[in-house]
Structure formats: structure tokens, C-alpha cells
Amino acid sequence: MNKFNEMIDHMHMPEEQYEQMKADLARRAGMRNNTPVWRRYAVAAAFAVCLLGTAATAYAAVRYQWFRIFFDNGGQETEIMEELLAKASTETVTAEDDNYKFTVLNHLYSKEQQMGLILCSFHFQKEHHTHLEVLDREYNTVVLKKNRVVDWQTFQMENTNNGDRDLQFGIKDESGEEVISANVKYYTGEMAEDGGYLIGIRYSFDMEKKVEKTPQLLMSLENAGDIEDKLKVRLPESGEVACVRFTSENNPGNAIVISPLGMTLTKTGNKTEMTEEYENVGNLENMKLVMENQVKTIEDMGGGYATSVLRGDMETECTWYTQKEFTNLVDVSEIKYIELDGEKYSK
Image (tube, rainbow, N blue to C red; front, side):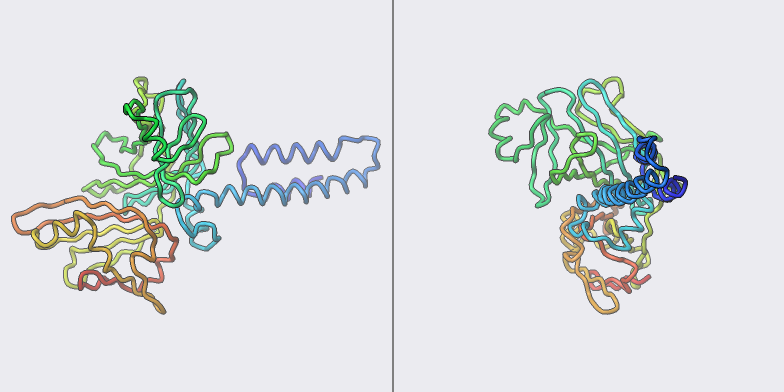
């Protein structure tokens, strides 16, 4: 039996699943004491192989499941995905009251870009006049209720008096510093193992002062009447996502920081010329990411959302900070340089 326990010992999986597997294996091996020893071990061996194969397949599916929520090509196992999985937290944290419950399953955060991904399970504990708006795989708005999912048009017809409250997730810095957070919620029709809606949350925020260490972030359910602060958790820390920084050859103050999660752009220029472009983040359409054997555009990186924040505002100049999420996993280390608005950005 020891050799089969050793096989299981070398598998990486949640502790509960690990202990259950070992218990099942031991139980099956010894359930018939009148069976010859050699046959009991043969049964155990066969069961171990079957169990290991099933568990490994199931665990791999769970392990990669959340990338399909965030990335259009997330169903393909790649080296980039492996790198991100190694950085993501696997510690689970739960918040609940009588009305709602959510459990953070995975968290991945880029400190340099101030962007992150959260996979969580969400439950409506009771029927209330509340709902959660999310995006489906085609980026259409759908509405989650306690026992059903409805499209946006149907919900609008049902909620003519606007009596339903829209629940929101907020992410803030525990230090108390006011952080403006933008987040988008995704749901692809899958349920979590605990029976909740499996939801992916992309978030980003802009702290003007770069912090030396990763801030302790809090996640809470807003608009839920949580006067006792029960619907709030500290997000588990993740490993740092590797980023590549590109600096403008014409203006060293202009920089692009890029990772598989997305990109950030800091750009200073003429106030009159830049304000409309960067307020609508339409300027990114002419971006070219030049690689060894190909050139990619921002469209090739996927149709994710973008936001811009005015960081500096002077009489003739202004500085815009833009964050753009990617919905296609790309190996950004292959990018040699970037072209934007006639400027070349190099490593």
C-alpha cells in the first residue's frame, strides 16, 4: 500500500481531496479481509490507477477552468497559463451573512500594473429584490438571480419599477487610502463545486504613488445592506505577474507596461490634442506590437475593456494613465518594441 500512497503524495491538489483519496484507497484495499493478500493489493493497485487518473483529470479541469472565463483562448494549455497558475493564490476565503455568500477561489495580481483577476463562487442565500449583472462569453449583459439567469432585455421588462438593487463587488486598499476601482464581472454558465455561480472578476485601480510592496486588498459586496461588515474579505496575496516595460525613445516619461493580463500606458502631451483621444481610449487602435516574425495590433490582444484616468492637468500639457485588459493570452516576452502615435517604445 505504501507505494500507492507515495503516488498520491506526489500529486498537487486541495487537501480535502487529497485526504479523501487516500482514505478511499485504504478502504478499498482492506474491505475484504478474507481475500488473499496478493489479490487485495491487486485491487488496490487497479483502484489507485483509476482514482489517480480520474482525480488528475478532474483537478486539471478545475485548475484551468478559470482561464476560460477571462480569456477567449483560455481553453488551450500553454506555458503562459502555467506561469500564471504558478503565481495565482489558491487559498480560499469566504464571506457570508443571512442573504449572500461569496468565496474567493483564486486571485492573481500585477502590482506594477495595479490590475488583477479573481475567481469566486457566489450564492444568493435568500430571495431578495437584488441581482448581479455579469457578462457572458459573447460580452452580453445577463442578470443573475437566486434561482435563475435571465438576459438583459427580459430583466428590464420584469423590473419596470427599478425595484431591484444591483449588487457590486468593490476592491479597496486596506490602508484606508481612497482607491477608485474599475471591475468587470464574467459568467460563462458554469457553477462552482459548492453550487454557487462561478464568477470571474477583472479589476484595476490607479494609485498615483507606486507602493514598495503589494498592498493588502479588501474585497466586499456592495449595495447589499452589509451594516455588520460580514460581506468583506482580505484577498489572498498572489505571486507577482511578470511584466515588460517599454519606454518612448522620444519622451522617456511615456511608458507602456505589458503583461498577459493587459497593458498600462502613461503618456504626457499637448492638452488640447490628447484630451479627447485618451478620454475615449480610442488612440490604442493604431498600436503595433512588433515581434520577431509578426506584428500584432491591439485587436489581436482581444476585446477587453479599457479605462483612462487624468493624472496630471497643467495649462498646456496633461498626463493620461490608461489601463487595457487583454482577452487573449499572448507571450509578451516575444515583443521586441511597440509603436504608438508615431513613437517607438523600446525595452
